[in-house]
Picture 1 (cartoon, rainbow, N blue to C red):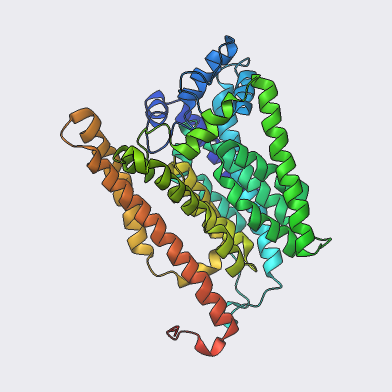
Picture 2: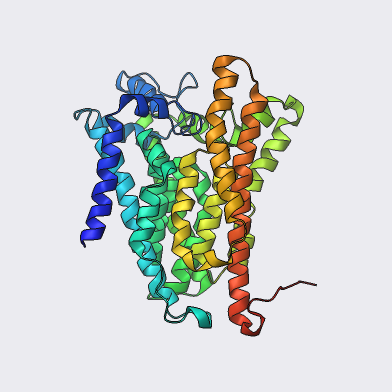
Length: 414
């Protein structure tokens, strides 16, 4: 109890302290690695100003966030300004706490799963270690202190996963619908959430029935959110300003993703084709992963979260912070990973050089867009290698459990 309270309080106080350092907080709030046009608190403030003065916030192409965030921060704006940092710090700390619940539930469920002989009697990773790895990850802290609204999407995803592990279909689908409403791409996490509730719900339904029930709750929750947004704004304009921007890439502000530079150079006659290809590429992995890892749907959620971080149109380090925080939940696969040193160096290399190349391009004028885009490719290469490594680790561990005589031997597929 003392350790858990210490971790949560230290994480909360650390964030509040950084919020009170304007040089750090203001710098992070403008960094393209940390915030995007879809998650920028500065743009949210501009949209809120228009909303409070009865001007349509979606006119002008500046504001691209859903109406519920306007309503939430409109309510918060009536309170002292010090409340906003407290809200962000509390939400991020709560996500860390939820990760401990997810880890406890995962370990409870996996007690019934077969394990390797060498693993028997060994303790699983401490859930509070998982929380600490998330809460003190520099990517997590930077995303929180920048006031990026990706934090609310991450909270919704983690809550959906926590409720799915409890077998609460309605709550899980409501939260994943909210995450999809906020950011569009979390809709791909709906199938593994269905698998989780199907595999481990106390009152089990058939798979077909579980899919029907979950889809009904998901679609109805999302529809209610969209209709409520229309009532709040009095217009459907928000649909194109939010989801149209995400799917059609109308704002080509540089970020750490792979879309912006490609579409700056794209000829207009090819734009629609490659938009469809790029967006489908983000979603196409959901079905095969759910089929291949149907017995490990939590792992599917982690991998799909990583794919979102790589292939969404406006990614930020907050997206990476989510799946990096979830990875230790499956700590048993780490001993099978092969490229840890290389991946760590790719992340450190890109984290160091991205701000330098941005400065050379934008401020010093001694570089160009190729400098910054090249380092974002290095960053995304690190993420791709990480996902490949953990997928291999899960497959190899499953193979070793099913074929203990092959433990430690090289496996070649013919």
